[in-house]
Length: 324
Image (cartoon, rainbow, N blue to C red; front, side, top):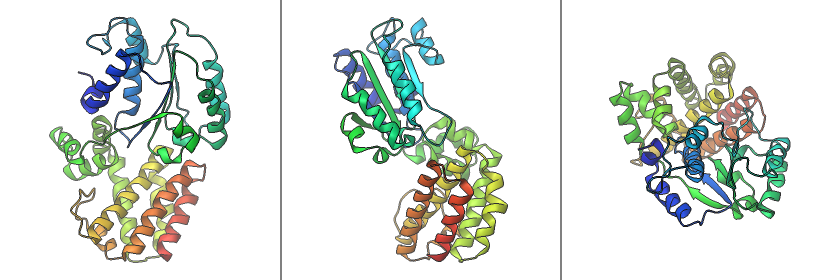
């Protein structure tokens, strides 16, 4: 059984039936948290459409077509996932040019845009032309962790498939069983539901250092300690040099504020940081301060995705949190 069949068995079964009945739509939005298998299901769908010998409604995973899809080298399966904060008009135009071509080896083609929340407004408007004139035999899939950031016209013209997030406890237990530290396993499992990605985080020394730095910052913020602003440059920046590391750092700060809110209201919900003293101290703030703080962290994450530098986004955030 493939990983995606274990992670999202219901969705796999549904798409197997949809494809078998010939009812596949021209456009889908796969929406869900990181690690829930959105890209993996897109790959599975492409394999199922192109497989030479499907078995029980599933791709065989062994034929030449399946192997080419899995390796990312199939000419009729096109992925758009630029290593940038945004997906620009030129990126989409290049994909649309590819869409205008006929299938290289058949009449089925699959196009996948990963992290579609990164699409600029211009890129989304360019993409709308595909929705207005769909090509027979072609399916486009947008994967996103923030579907509400997509234009309403994009959302309304595609079928939105929501991916359920596995319980944090289940992912955590799987990591602990593989030797990961339970505390780091809990935090990693709160960031991603992908067991492999979570294990990589839980066993990464740099991840542990970023986690400690974020908790130190939270402790300073809870005390309204002005040195928190200095810590951005002296502590956070050296530990978050790449965009994924920077995104992860803000996600950790968001988890801290979410934990503090749950602690403040005595909500019995899974907490990424457990009863860490920094979180308990932050939870002493007013409900308004905590809610406003969480919203500010989320806004900083959006600003980071919009080409604002990490330093500028976090320094502005820390000033706002200190003043709140």
